[in-house]
Length: 405
View 1 (cartoon, rainbow, N blue to C red):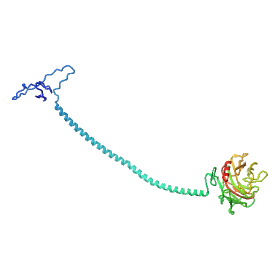
View 2 (tube, rainbow, N blue to C red; view 1 turned 135 degrees about the vertical axis):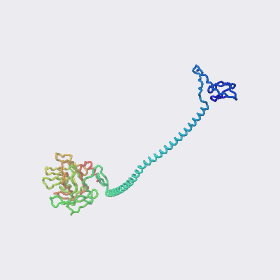
View 3 (cartoon, one colour; view 1 turned 45 degrees about the vertical axis):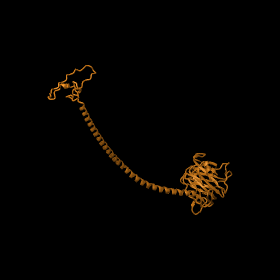
View 4 (cartoon, rainbow, N blue to C red; view 1 turned 30 degrees about the horizontal axis):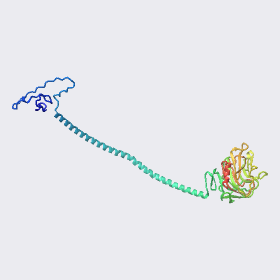
């Protein structure tokens, strides 16, 4: 039998429905099949709520059936499946849209970034073309300079070792000796020097082109030879100051008293302005050669530097001698207004003394070899004449002399 209210099956003999609690009549009391009676079901009596906290309450009279709950559950599941499918579709669409937008922006950004790259690449190409042009021009210039340098080197090698900073003797660069300001080797040429002659016994020498200079074997290659009729003027020498060094090689075939080796001066015939420095041979009871004599007429100063008693003081005819002297403008001589001069022969110190200032510290002076304004000319050869605008010390003088041995 089934409950007429909720439809749940009721076991035989039960007075109430187990599903909704509705009272039921036994089958014996049911109306006959031929005449059905419809009566209002009596409401169940209200039950007192039993005392005690652990008693299970009776199910409410209006509790939905299991079938309705099952149907509702299935319907809810169908709705959830539909919602899930819709969400998946929406999510897939969103992913596709996002991917498409990402690809688009990447292309756009890449295109924007590549444009400057293309411009820069174009600039680089133009720069490379210009650089290649410049490099080619520089290469051609460098090649030309290298060719010139090679030519200069070959010329230098053919002519011997050269240096812009140091003196060179033969194939040796003298590292301790600076390059001379003026240098004359006289190898078949006078260079900037000139032939000078004296037409009368007391006169300043004059340059001439009427006399052909002679050359002989020198201490290093060739040397100029003066036959006793002319001398040499170093016409390009200019002011070098009060500190200087002069060195040269000489060989005289004959020597006379006051024979002039080197003569420097200005206003030589002016009794008030004359300044001169003379290096030559003078004979007396104490010394035969060489000496340095200097004079300044304005102050009536006149000095001589002679070799000391223990020093070599003789110059022999037919022998090459290296003579050097220095004047130190920073060192006072024996008195104020005098400078210290030092004489060397064959690389050795032979004496020192006073020298008048301003000999080479003026704009108007002349430098002569083998000739002056008064004394007898003589046959003599000169070679490797050098002038420095500084003082060489004794060690440098010795090194210079030894380089020719």
